[in-house]
Image (cartoon, rainbow, N blue to C red; front, side, top):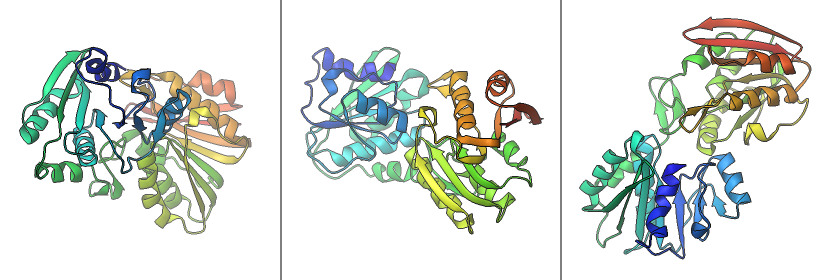
Length: 337
């Protein structure tokens, strides 16, 4: 992950002293943080990153707590509002004189982020490395720049008028209904009932539509999602529709494994990107785990981009397969155990 390497460069090059205490925001599973940053607390709500960093020996938490921090390091995301909110959060957590270091990919708007920081705080030091930019400054005395209130609010989870659901920047499709998910929801059959799992549930659109399509027929609905913030939003969106359905929310990496033979149905719109690259192995792992989680005679409904070659994986793990629908560049595949 180039922005993580770039983030460490000012320390490795002796331009900045390694902090004894501090935190790193927005760490991803492929960050490859060097041992020199091991004293810092990694903050991530993404389950695969949480597990990978924990296994690598870092201290990892979901949310940033109060503490005595010398430095805050921020990895910028592709969502500007989310990145600005992270900068505001880091600034809030640091004492006067604390060091704030940010790193972002040149292809995802880091220059505009640095410009916003300069307008709010004044001049910063910076360098370009590994197709990324790093910039840093120290927290001055005095009141917080007025713009920080807008940065905090910009990433807040909120009701979204365009969808009728609650979500926030940084969540997949937070301000619109994903085309593939809409196509999948339109295929929910009257036969769906019993125990259901939603793999990669996001902020809960598919689960909500399932409960609307099958009122009273779903005895249990388990939502599996790797992003903690999305899962929390899903609880807000889905709980009012539950009726007598037992809901369970799992902050989990689906690819790491699921309970075997527990479910009658699995619905999923699996992710297919690792960073900026298309990675069909990720969706393939979702299919494999779905098959393991289904009992004998269970059914999977999956939506995917039309060009993604998932049919062979479905054939390997399911007794039968059929294409239920195709539209707008997406396909819905049914697999039966």
